[in-house]
Structure formats: structure tokens, C-alpha cells
Length: 116
Length: 113
Image (cartoon, rainbow over all chains, first blue to last red):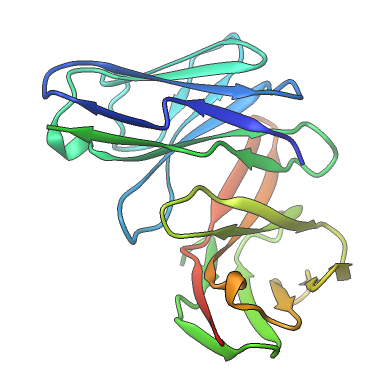
């Protein structure tokens, strides 16, 4: 299957600072990437859909000014959590859409964010 | 009604048995169907996808799709303790504006040695 990487895998930051998470598709071009958040023992929650060269589409309840998404190339999307607060601590997972006939999503390994 | 529904479990099966995971979906426009496995603390891993009615086999895994009844299932033969994880069902609907994916909340499977 296709490979998606995320960096960093873990990050601890202080309240009020910003954190950038990178998501890369390593062996295919992804015009669409997705950003999810998952709290412990809860299901995946889609935050936004990122399309290369255009503005991201955010799900209801997700603040676009707080979670900045940039999809500047066909292999890279970034999520920046601005002015992070302890309640933003979560597992952030990206996925990339393989534009084959069946549209498989391949997930990155995730980034565990802890805001102190 | 949720787009994708799964029994949250937990489902427990003895080692070597067949584990059967079920998923129903509401939108008849759904075109592709996926099963992901997620270990605790890890991200989801694609196990199988299916888009035609019937069965699709890959090793110990068999996906079954019935579009008329709007369900998709995953069978795991010869279950192993390493299969213990949460299994997520997902469907894809291709719209004019792009793809819309819906995930179920997952079924927790425990394989007992």
C-alpha cells in the first residue's frame, strides 16, 4: 500500500504557542488530504479536507483560524495549531487520498500533541 | 441516523475462530467500502477495500458487500491474538464536489488465546 508520513510523531508545547504538523505522501501524489483528531477511546473526527492549491474545507465546529491548513504541493499538507491550549491535546492523524478507481485513504502514523 | 453504523462491541472470539464484523450504511450512493484496523495508540491501517457486490478474499480476511441490503462485513478466519484491535468501517461517496468519506465508530475485537 501507499505510504504516508507525519512529522513530528510526538510534540509537547506550552500553552499559547503554535505547533506545525507535516503530512507527506511518499510514493504517490495526493491532491486531497484529510486531517483527523482522535481523543482517547473515541472515534476519528474529521477536522478538514485539504485540496492541493485551494483552501481547506473545515468541518462544522472546527475553527479555521485556529487550525491552519496548507496544501502547497501534491505530496505535502501541513496543519498548524495556533495558540494551543491544553484542550487541544490529542492525537492528530492525516490521510492522503489515492486517486485510483477506488479512492483508498492511507493514514499517516499520527502526531500526539500535548499542550502543557 | 448515522451514515455508517457498527456495533461497538467488544467482540470476543477464541483463537482460531472466525471473527465476523458488520457494518451498515445509509446512503445508496456509496461506492467504495473500506475496512481499517486500528491498534490502541496507533493510526488506522487499511486492510481491505471492496466496491462490487459479493465477496473479496485476501489471506485470512474476507470482505462481503451487499448493496441491496446496504451492509458490508469483514470475516477474519483463524483469528490470532494479534488481530485484537478496533476495526473501522468506512464508505466513500463520490460527489460532484469531491469525495465524501464516512467512518463508523469502530468495533473492538479481542481474540482470546
